[in-house]
Image 1 (cartoon, rainbow, N blue to C red):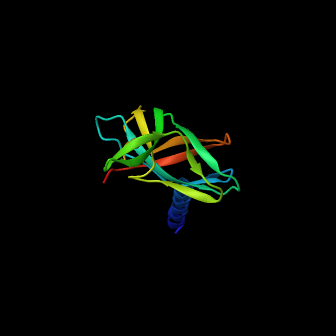
Image 2: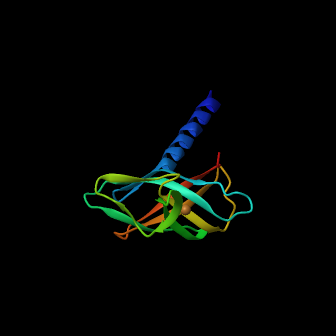
Image 3: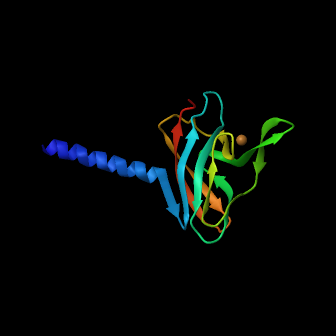
Length: 147
Ligand SMILES: [Cu+2]
């Protein structure tokens, strides 16, 4: 009986940790649905996706992204040019007051270059989002496989 209670306790702790991974809120900025793709063996880049909610009464912009696992993380968007879809670097992502922005496959995303380690599904890495109001939000990103 005691043993069952103990494992139930563990399950609740794991659930709480999972919840913490899913949403991070700092100074009216909430990040959710965040993940990074597992890297393909032999390559040193990946891409990351997330939703940023701005609960403040003023707009804010994401101006840069950093991480221990990469010396170069760029913000990208997909644009259509001459009927061809291609990626373009952008230097800020504006999030209007009381609204949100979704970075997702085929849309805006974070491009992670120069990976210092292989990213394997199930791992969790951290990135830091730097905002125009000088706030920083550290976001845990679970690594998900490509398929
Ligand atoms: Cu890109």
